[in-house]
Length: 286
Image 1 (spheres, one colour):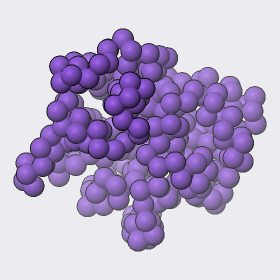
Image 2 (image 1 turned 60 degrees about the vertical axis):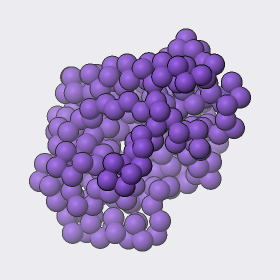
Image 3 (image 1 turned 180 degrees about the horizontal axis):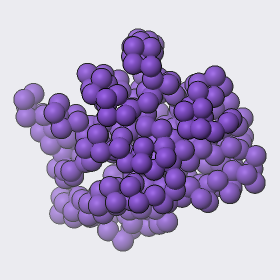
Image 4 (image 1 turned 45 degrees about the vertical axis):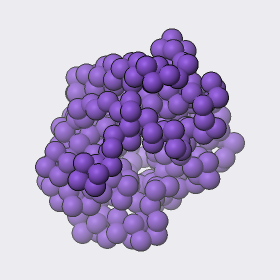
């Protein structure tokens, strides 16, 4: 079994690298890509632990990017990137810092709104990672008794992005950050020796941008993802055929922070043939 989209507590998964690899082993996942958000920090450790557990670790990343011409987010996965490569750290480190600072301001607003949590308490959920995410804030609120789920009405109340055109207000703690240009993300992954792939385009409404991304060096598209229904998978396959893109898939596993617990590690396997194509593009063998 293969899973090409998975996170750890280096970014926004509740489980450590070792716990994730243990789970992969238990679920029969033989090839696992670690694709933490905007960092390669945990990859050397993951590769070593994977060898111990008999799970082949593919070093990856998921860059939190933006399509500025269309005003939509766009996540770019990178496979077989060189851990610690300057092209990635120079591009992504400022975003990591900005996200952490935004989380601090969000916690301040939540406290001002009357919720009994603290920045110190929230930050304990992110120990060992690159910073605090909204999931960590929600975990603190859950443990304080304000909600029974990470995602739900309270999450929307606090963090909704809003839509002025539709009259949808922003969440009371919503704080915007400036994401990375999607073309810069593709370029950085390529410079780091990796294979850039467009993540869950159905969820992010990125299909109109594919031709431009291909011109910039995009080499693949994520077909199988928990947010994709059958029709979206077929649309992604059609785009892959039109633009000669490799096809990937994965569970987008976030542990306790996973949006739907129905999707465990390996539940969106792209199959061995697609893995072989990916490894061939990266100049490696399965």
